[in-house]
Length: 299
Image 1: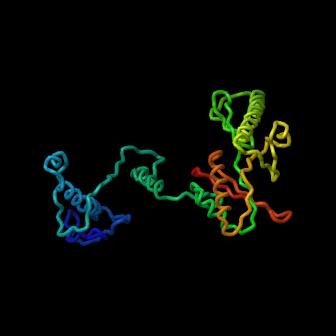
Image 2: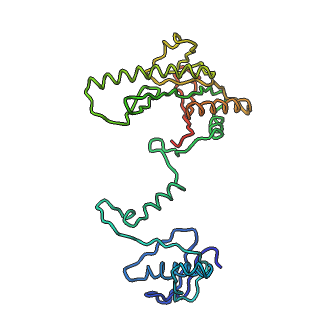
């Protein structure tokens, strides 16, 4: 049996006139032609019929009685064929929004194909969207030039309940509602003020919860804030993004200790927020810092 392709010789089914052809394995092959040229005879009545017939013959006599009997196609030789599955076109509904893919029902299979073997790329930066593992992060960071100073951060986030809908709030105080209800402008302003007040309270509670677990430094706008009491948070602007400072690392060449310290900081950030932000500290005044963001989610 051929392992590279399906070989057919002397096919004489319906409109086929003693033709020979070869179809490679592990590739997508499209059969095209004018009406009446024998496309269906080649695909369904020759290849599919012989593959299904051989599969049925391999079953027991008891199992064969429940399956459709397929006649042997009029062909001299068919080699390299496997059990076949045929998907026929159905046009049961007509919709002006239908496309070739949806009308022929191949859209579902293409969507499954792209979901399993396709790759997603960001429209803004052009990079591949994927889950970042701890080892991949370490390899990326350690390729940076020695002497680079990094702040390892993760965003501090909370969620509040607004009415009957849960409204997630990020560190910058922005919210979105899961349920839209018509309300007056005054009512909306009151709910916004109440939501921000609740957000601030929950954020402070979250900060002190983090402090109990050993995180006692915050980062915001390039400044580091040590917090040990409510008074120490007075200088923090909770209307702006707030980050927890996990560690400050200076990269060095071939240092196992630096790698272990970096991995530990990334794992801590993943446990707390599901993402980690690495921001470089400029060596010169006026230089811009570089920010790298990694996430264990597919985003």
